[in-house]
Length: 158
Length: 316
Image (cartoon, rainbow over all chains, first blue to last red; front, top):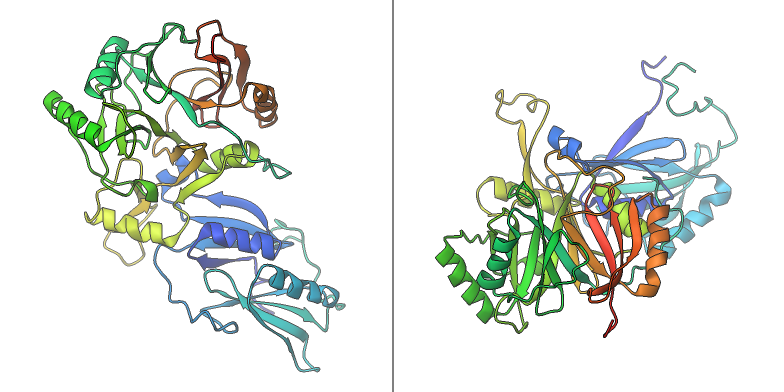
């Protein structure tokens, strides 16, 4: 048995917070939860600059970096620069994602079909405005319940 | 503040109509702005605020002085007032400031439109003044270019002015990495920046492995947002220290930024402001001779006073 349960949240480092907010909210449909460093009390405490977003039950922060990060050539659409975040949609909604990316002029690679015996069906690869690698896929095992998703904030007691 | 549920129509306004600033001696303020800055000596007898002395500027805008025991906006904040003048007028103003023994600064701000040849000083009451020059014809300051206020919550201000009132964004500072890289240049003494544009944050603790006490301070841009008010601009700077705000129900006071709007639009503005939860007073009809037919007074979520005012028609 693993010592930890699951991913709680993650952070994605970006070079432009406003641009990143617009991308994750308008293209991927994230909702804004909160922002840090827009208040005097945050400034007085030297807090990091970030915005917390939610995609359904997944919470993540887009973190403004105070230094320039190395970013692979923009022509590369598929890869991992430190990390790659991969988001899941039902198979029936996968075509909508492709339409969304096209509608927002987001360059992508795919759909790429995965081996039939594996859990992944198809993936599309693209990048956020900073250049972080992203992926959206549908799973062949989407009807299988491995572990019931607990409500946010359950604290592991469920 | 909960984000507005629907897209708001873009705000329509005629720009900054007047500024009311805080001074300790209105007579001395008229002398300073009238003679030293060359605004002239035309005061407005029927100014709607009886406690303020109003000076007419060549542009038709008004600079009003409200008397208070304490001094103005403070030299450590981003709050300031910027006035337009010609290059020739500026030379004369600088000569007179030098004769008065007033220090002139050439530090910079982040907004690209203000990058060239900056000029700042403080009036005798601690209000920070900026001169912006261009093709404006007057012997001294011709009119108001922009104003800066400070706020304890930039997110609230964004939601209020952009999300609820519909004012367009001119420029944002503090949202991207380039701003932070530039802030380090300021901390290293490579760039002279205006008060309120930079700050040294204190982290809870040092970076792991660093010499104790050596890495707690971090240079950062101070969050700012600039809004377009017609041909004028309002800059909102994050306050770097807590300050006493007016009582929540207070909607009318000094310092204050006046924004010109149509008379027919005042009731609509009152509805928008009320829906946003803002304290308002008015619309208040003004008497014969006043430069405005009516005003709607309000304060933003961080306690800054504003006024929507409709110009009086000629002959009224």
